[in-house]
Structure formats: structure tokens, C-alpha cells
Image (cartoon, rainbow, N blue to C red):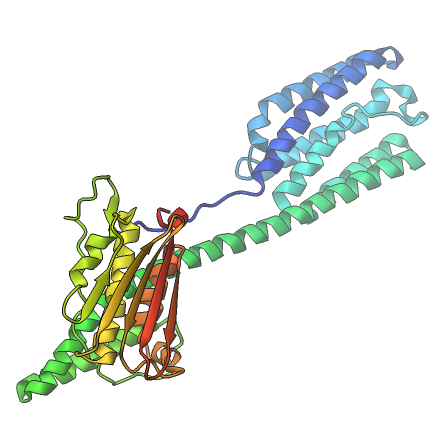
Length: 403
């Protein structure tokens, strides 16, 4: 059973939430230490102590809330911003000189953590809303907008909006990437199923149609129905893979592709098969098989797919070059790749015939050969000169074949 592709989703927001968690803890510590070293200037230090105690406890118990977007609810954001605004407005009560001297507020830079939470959760619009409230609170706390106050407010406002915008772009990119991965996985699965259908059902229907036409009578009617089903199935298989220009009623001339069974192919190493043993069964009076003297070992899945691609190439020889055509299989085992060449002495493929075949829903070369090699990380090159035969070169890199 083929392994289905798995789409792995990665959150681009997770590092931002982790950074925000660390930021809240560090800025909480900074605000507390700032008060400890300057507590002598406070007329009502108990107000500062009470607020910093509430802020510290709130910060520590709500750390799970800023772990990800799902846990960071709107209710938490409102409560968190309320605490920050309260601390700003309580600063003149704790320090009567705060309005006349530009200095830090009770929450200090901890307030920016609340604004950043809005930005990461809701984007730049939420960030603009939260930073605007912080700006108003700072102006009210100072009593008059000074240059330093305006500078700090503008810095928080711009930074939070920029971060919110970046988060929105990152989310859109993540959704696009996830959708692209899903489409790619679905397309690969569809191509795999199309190859299986082409290598089995379509070939059988083509054989039934051909034999029914030869026998005549009731068999001819059965063959005609098989031909209609073949055309319908080809159209269905090609839907979404190639653009079908017209439904072809041509009958594929050829025998059923040879099945490849690797269950009984020992290689002396688990999960690995000798490619030579899979291809040797094709050798016969019309197929010459040339192989290296040593085993050509590949992962079982890669060996199976490569052997199936060779079978598809030989089937095309029988169908298009005729039953009397000669074919040659050459296996080359290189340190970094395995190369299998299938050559015949048929009439060759007319220019543009492959593109026409794909448009008609005949995907033997596109799926059974090139599609298989692409999935293995390899390549399939087809060289055909009219009147001089066709050569198909299949390359499988060893480093990618096991993936």
C-alpha cells in the first residue's frame, strides 16, 4: 500500500509568542527593580508596591495565555491592557513629581507587552487600537504632552502596527503554503492512482476492445463497449492532470503490461531489491537484457517503480513499434545513480505525438514513465528519431531514491 503524503503545518507565529512570553517576564522584573532602586522618590510607595504586586502575579499566572493565539483570548487582552493603563494612571498618585519630571511610569516598558499581544493576536488594526489607548493614558498621566512622551508614544504606536502587519502577512503566506502543500500531495496521490489505472484497467479494456473487434459477432459489441469505457476512463483519469482537448476513440494496440511482483525477490538486505532480477524477466527473443555483473541494489519502493516504468516503456514498444520490433534494456550502476536505457528499432515517434497523446488522455509516458521517475527524484529522457527507433533513458539518483 502506498504511503500517503503528509502535509506538515508549521506556525510562523509560534516564535513571536515565545518572544512575547520572555518579554513580559523580563519587563516585569525590570519594573520591579526600577522601583526598588528609586523607591525613595515616591510620596506614596505603598501604591507602587500594591500595583507592582498585582502586575507581577498577573504576569506569572497568565504566562500560558501568551503561549499561542488560541489561548490568548479577547477577554485576556482587555484585562491585560486594563492593568497596564491602570498602572500608567496611578503613577502620579504614587509619585507626585511624575507630571513635572519625565520619568518612567509604574509598569514602565511592560505596557508594550500588552500592545504587542494585541498585534500578534489581531494584526495591525488591533495594535493601532491598543497603542492609541496607551498614548491617551500617557498624555493624561503627564498632564501635558512633552517631547519625550510624544517620542515614546510614537515609537510604541509605529512598532506595534509594524509587527501586526508582519503577522498578517506571515499568516497569509502560511495559509498559501499550506494550501500549496495540500494541492501537491493530492496531485501526487492522483497521479499515482492514474498510473495504477493506466497500467491495469485501461490496458485490459484496450485488449478486450481489440480482441472483440477481431472475433466479431457478440464479441465485437462487447469490444465496442469496452472501448467506450476506456475513452471515458481516460478522460476521467486525465481530468485535473492535463487539459483534455478531445475524447479519443482510437484503440490502443498492445498487450497488457507485465506486472512486477517484488515480494519474492530476495536481496540479502531488508527493504532492498536487486533491480537486475526485476528486469531480467523481460528478456526474451525480442528483448535483449544487458546487466552489470554485480547486484544493482535499490530501496524496494524505488526498484519497483523503476521496473514498472521499464515495463511501461516496453509496452509502448509492443503497441507502437509492432509485435516484431526488437528492444534492448541496458542497466548501468554508477556510484551516484542508476541508469536504465530502453531502446527499440521501431519507426520512432512523430514530432508532437506525445503532446497530442497527453491532450487525448493517453498518459502512458507522462504518468507511467515520467511521473514515476519524478516521484523518485530522477528523470526520464525520451529521444526518438522517425525511422530510427526510440530510446528512453531513466535515471534514479541514489541519494533521493530512498526518500
